[in-house]
Each structure stands twice: as structure tokens, then as C-alpha cells.
Image (cartoon, rainbow, N blue to C red):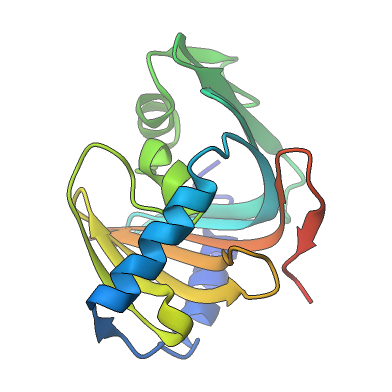
Length: 209
């Protein structure tokens, strides 16, 4: 599956590399205060659905496809559909373990999502941290360094050995939500382009305008 999807991933990564790099400013008190206010506003959000496109690479191989990710408290449902083959896999689970379906050899179970993806697909995706990063938040439990761009929104976040690059934000939503989230820990890269984001039972934010 990894090799079938490689061409799609390579194309997505090439286009992403051509995107303009935002100006990054060292964190100051005003920017950190604005970020703390955003984090307080989103602290209680544990139900959301996003749709978009995901590309993953280890520097040699990878995969890409359209993504639908639903989070409901600790439970997650992560479905990736490849645009070339039409095939998809589904990763679901929670605090009691993870289930990966749609791969050759039948469903696989494991202790957590990261372990299953690494074992079955060879993908290094920090899903636990990514759950916070896709909202533009620092993940809990470890220190993080921030850089800011326009409107005092994060442009770069460094945490748990990963560098998270925020290339675009939806400014019409309040508080603003990320549209493009690129995470890397060489040689691994995870690039997420968000088309729509629905928080809880609220209205869907069309990020593809």
C-alpha cells in the first residue's frame, strides 16, 4: 500500500514545498498571551470532525489521500482514502487500544494508533500530539517552543522532537483554526491540508474558500 501511494505523496509534498514560508517572530508576552487565550477557548473542545488531505513520507516511501478524522473525547476514527487506487484504511480506537482495518492480511489490533501505523504501514505519525496540533494548540505533558506570524498566531511549534509548521489559518473562525499543518521529524514528514473543520455540534467551517 505504501508503494502504491508514493506518487501521490510525492506530488503533494512537492506542491507544499513551493508554498510561501510565513515570517516567524520570537515569542513575546503579547503573542504568548494571545495563544494562552486561544488555548483556554479551545480547552473544552473534545468533539470535532475535520476533512482534508494527508501526505506522509519517511524520506523514501510514503502515502497520501483524502482524510476524515472524527474525535469524540478519547475515541478517534481516522479514515484515509487514496485518490489513485480508491482503497482506504480506517484507524479507530481509544484508551483501550486501536484497530486498523482495510489493509492486506486483515484487521490488526494494537495498544495505540502510533504503534499500529508504524507496524503495518511504516508510517511515523504522532497522532496523540497531532490531536492538539491540528487545533493550533500545544500538546499536554511536555514543553513546547513557539514562533509567531501575523495576527499573533503560531507559525512554528517545536515539541517532542517534532517541528510543526503552520502555513495557513482560517481567520473567519473565532478562535482561528489551522488550515495547513506540516509536521516533521527528519526523515519523517506529515502534511495535513484541512478543507473543513466542525467543532462539536457547531457549524462547519469551510476552510477551502
